Length: 344
Image (spheres, rainbow, N blue to C red):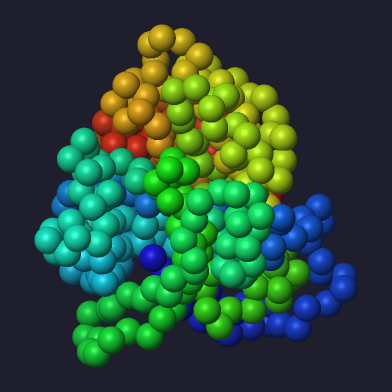
């Protein structure tokens, strides 16, 4: 999970554009979310892998993501370790692996169970500006969850116990939801939320967020279940929307699209007895099948993937609804990844 990235960004990278909120910088069409308030939407997606260094090399050299140098990892108290690629829209791709198997078995056995079936997208996090308020909202909705819990991360060279850097609200297993909520401490969510457009422009120009594949952020998550009807009510309550019906021929899937602030969550089921979605359900049952990533230059991504010999399919209307490149699980550490250009 990210450390103080957003806090540092608010104080430095965005110090000019993301300063004191002004009335004219209120986000167009983005009022506070019923669950996330002034949170940013999809915070990060978690790619669980068996070998962190091998995954780091693959994502960097074959798919064009910028990650920390070899050997630089963050370690969680639950026994996992990570390395992440950060994007200008304040989302990121977390590459997660096991550092201490015995500790993970005791504190977060879900990771081991997942990796026993193979690598892939373990889950994702939604950004909330107030974990306590989100927990109260879940209580009203009757959705089983934990109370806000502090978390931290240790970096190379750090000593002693790391101070809490975030609060998370987890869903209990009975909810069967592949995500959680996260609030970073000491972060002025209201300021960043209200000055989003100017802040995003500055972030996009900052070397810190420059990705070789021109990625600027996670735009959508694809959650696949055997039957949408069984989960639809829960997602509608959580996300405060009825959702819009969608069909995805490239995945042989159908379901609903939910807008989450500036991003989107797809709740899908197989539309055919065979095809990518049906294959995923047969292997995992339900979970996060794929992720859409917006890029500045789709042609540059195409050239990169050809140069690194990564198989990808051109789609005139991919999961994002735009022209895109679809990278299948065999070419992306067990995950479907869609690269698409946006409307910016």
